[in-house]
Image (cartoon, rainbow, N blue to C red):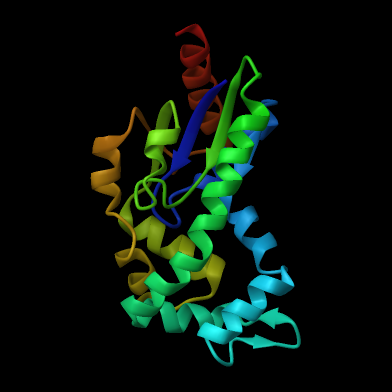
Length: 194
């Protein structure tokens, strides 16, 4: 198995590129999906409520409130990461073990690849990128957040310019879906030939 990471800052097109990989028939492991499942785990919700009072109501996490807390208090953000990241790492390792036999390219859609130190677990790194204003407008429209909220989210991630320097490939996603698909297919063809 060749494990290729799709990463980049919020709003740069990770999910879009991952969807293109799926449409080409490749397995994509979605780290955000792993996190969403965690938020349905009763045991995790109990731990969350213990450390972040008032963020769990009727068995559901108030992610908007939680986001406000962690993006304004770096210590709280680190605490939340310390609760989530070990689960994610264990899930990644299980995923790699279960799929090691595959003789093909598999993708992992992961926003915080470098921040979590996961670059050491992958064989190839694709960083998605768009102009900053496009990124900002995408996030504000998609997540219904203010420009200030976008800035708070964006500043806790490693700068995309730095990520691009660490990448094996950079794919611009501010283009048509057809062109994006062609770019990805060419990259996969080169990966499979290597």
